[in-house]
Amino acid sequence: MILSDPRPQPLALPPVPETSPQKERDAMTETAQPQGEQTVLVEDLGQVKVASRNLDVYYGDKQALFDVNLDIRPNEVTSLIGPSGCGKSTYLRCLNRMNDVVESCRIEGTVTLDGADIYADDLDVVKLRARVGMVFQKPNPFPKSIYDNVAYGPRIHGLAESKADLDEIVMTSLERAGLLGEVKDRLGDPGTSLSGGQQQRLCIARAIAVSPEVILMDEPCSALDPIATAKIEELMDELRQNYTIAIVTHSMQQAARVSQRTAFFHLGNLVEVGDTEQVFTNPRETRTQDYITGRFG
Ligand SMILES: Nc1ncnc2c1ncn2[C@@H]1O[C@H](COP(=O)(O)OP(=O)(O)O)[C@@H](O)[C@H]1O
Ligand SMILES: [Mg+2]
Image (cartoon, rainbow, N blue to C red; front, side, top):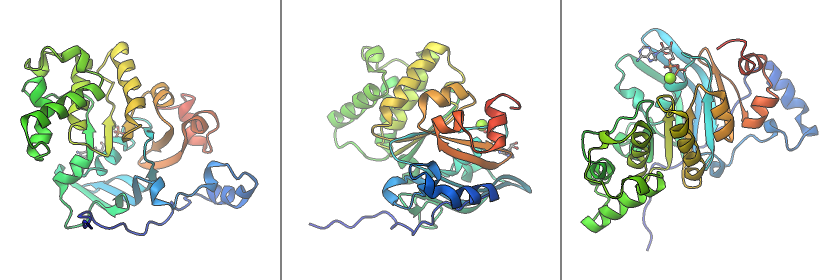
């Protein structure tokens, strides 16, 4: 039996253009270092989960992002770092169209998920947000029970055929979020009765429950204590086996701990992206170097 794929078909995706003369120079000399970061322009869609091309974002007259070209790879954690106000949250919100709800916000350029344009006219935004889930800075459980918080998405998306199905989804999601052991005897208690770190894991369970492909996290640990933070960081490493993760963090230590790739933003520009270790130990751009050594930020 052949099932037609209801999703939009992939666009031909151009490689990330080189943006600076320095990068052009590096690109010309890169044959000497075949394993080098810049030699691998990801053209195989299998290597790219989410991509932006020439992405400009405006709030009214004010431009918040300038020509951002970034590939986010599957089953990796990509960190977005940079000083406050540089556009990290704006960028993250473009990836599941959360900026649609900001009246003054206007977007130019392309964002693709599996090669298909997520800003296409016929795209179902609700389905998109199930495929690209989001976890916010401040844990925001619904005023419902722990169970109902996690069951909410599967219910509205009709993902469970029976109560047993729904139970299974809720349990699996709590388990994957590393929370089941702590809550299995109190699933009827309000989500808000949990500690901050537990609430954030509940929000992660809620995001996972609709089987997303990508999870966006905007400073998910900034309201948490170090122990709760460590738990979430540990969790991210497990989650990436099944999901693609993009995380905004103001902590360079956290970016170094949790991510395979790091993208550094400054004043609305993507200055540099590369393997996390390279970005932190051997940045290509002076602005990255200045930021990671604490010269501004
Ligand atoms: N809803 C909004 N309305 C107007 N300007 C905004 C809005 N959200 C963000 N901005 C502006 O866009 C720029 C980038 O902000 P943001 O993406 O929140 O940065 P970051 O997450 O890196 O701190 C800032 O100048 C900020 O003031
Ligand atoms: Mg932010």
